[in-house]
Length: 537
Image (cartoon, rainbow, N blue to C red; front, side, top):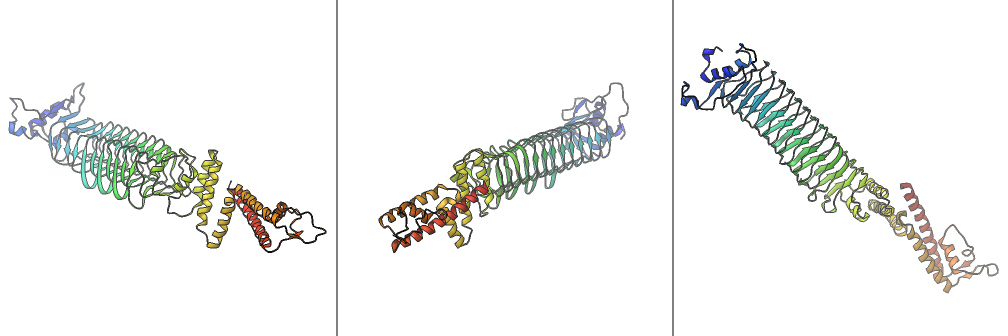
């Protein structure tokens, strides 16, 4: 583009470029400026003139030149096409308005800074930027495309609005960011997708508002973040948030945020690896399900003071999740399923008044309960499930009590397990179970057998003391002793020589039969119960 083809503003830009001076074309023209006031109302600079400067049209240089494009307040017409170009000068555009989306696909530049600009999108996929990429306080009415873009500095999208509800408003698939991804107060209508991206610093979404109703508000599948992944406070997302497969070297935080995807998954974070905390509490509200299956948390997974309002189905899925500490003290009870099957929860924090309606703990383990509670209360906690009878949750709870040295509470839990199991058995087996429960508490209440023995011994001794049975052989029978005679009837193994020497009649005979039967029942249930208890311990 020849110099005589440039308008007055373009000539001023050409003059400012070699020294990198800032040109503000929004300011009023000087009195001698030939540009009329009417023309100044629309400060047009053609995209071709800008591209020509950046691609070397201003080849004359003098010692000390430091070329840079610093432009403010321009209306840039036409397509700024810099595809696959080598751009040595940094680009800094402020308060500029574009008619068409700039194209920087495959380009390489030192730095691209756009603040307070309005444009119908920006295409910079596969570009290489040696410094920062800043699209801050801008309004985009089309997609921002950064797929496989390499940014050696920060990616700054703070306070920007990107509107493209019919598709991906921001797409940064497999992008590489050498610094922080700063998205504070970012507003997006459409999908924000950065699956496979790598961020060597912090990913900051504090105050961001993402809207993709019925779709994916944030797709960060397999993203890698070297520092914190911060979505608090003030973060909101309407649509699904996907973090599955992500790796975060520090912490993930959604405190004070709001996630909404009614009737579907609001947060999908399957197989995520977080080296420190995964914080989903402190004021977070979720309308929809949270799915964290297979996620590994280095320290604490927290839902403290969170509100999960998913209705029906599974509101919180923690299947095969691992954490050193897990805090389930939500703001109010979750009126849906909390599925923690096969989870490794470390130290578990919970509160009785916020236990979920349906809690599934099959094969879940925890090292300790921060608030053990009496065993009878914890049994009710286990029973808050629609999965039916499962032995492992009882055994895990009993093991937790034993680690605290509460052996009596552990036996209470195991007794509750046998009673729950009994309800699933056929009627004739349930009858035998009732006998074991009544006699020795399935072996977990062995003193109960002694009490039964003493009661039966007292009854039999009193009766036979008042109604002495006749000797079978008066000349050879030992002196009758009511206590030892009753013991002979009750204890099937030991004999004192009384039972075979005397023969009761009428009521005494029926009582002796009852004592013999009771003795055998007691002996059998004691043996079975104690054997079961020993094997479990």
